[in-house]
Length: 433
Ligand SMILES: [Mn+2]
Image (tube, rainbow, N blue to C red):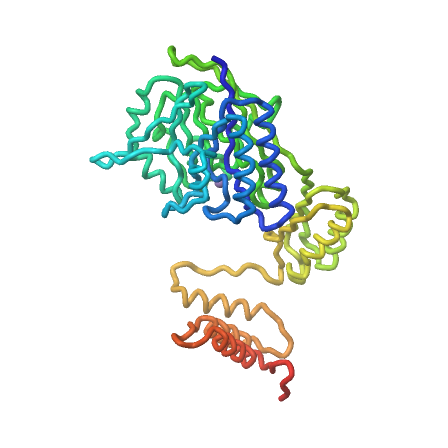
């Protein structure tokens, strides 16, 4: 029979603090659901991290319920697992009410056997007969321990067309830029599944799904698919990928001969146009840099776009904070940009060269050295280097004092403030010397 299903992952609804981008993330989800309904799929797979946190705010839950209900009204079942972000060890994930309402069918169900092995069970899709199972994530990739206890043989011997849903990075498929991310070897996965619906990795893998006609034949070599995040979830993803999407998998399956001929197609979702800009301020003063940024921005057509600006390089003088992100964003909004995100993480100043500290010392010694070196390279009128060093030590000391049992927060705050005023030889507004 001919089957067709949608595979989504890492929607991270509610991930953005920036409201425009948060709304764009919601829109991406709405567009994906509409597209899925249009495609008349048999079912949907969600490979984890539908929500960015396990207890999202009402807006986010409302959106998810509304959109998933559209699928249920069309009799399109949604199978899924929890991801590292929306899993809750105390079973308090907002995915739970979705499961109770029948809007989300958890395929990561199983039991521990007497000898502490993990026995997963299958859920069979009524319409296609396809059998689904999977392993939900835990925080900090702890599910890898669950994989090691998995009774793989039972899963491998189960008859029929099977899909495995995972929210774990596999070492063999790990892109180099994620080399520090925890992963599990492919060998921990049960074999003989027609399709492995991957989540957790925010990049589309295999990468070639995003090139050419966006399609790929599912075979032994290409049966583990990661659609990546449905919409970028942070600055880096927005800058690097600009958009996300999901997969539509379709083809002939034969349960009796246990054979399948599936192909997967990546469906890009682009609710807004993204413009990315990198400005290199190497060997420039703050004033020259501001001029350069102004020029670059003036030359842009930012109308109705979301703009990312990454400012990099090492300034010859001045400090990175003298280049003000909010002013650059404002300038872009005045040019008609929907919003602008400014990133200065890689902007440094020669005046403030990084200080290196020898390893193997105690924290106290490292702190001492850092403060000393910092004071030596900083010039503030009327404060000697020795005095500055003392002041920094006193600030850290004051910040380190705990509130005593029985004191009110207000009293504690007042006391901190007084101590700071004393350190900086200041008086409170309204008071005179
Ligand atoms: Mn994720």
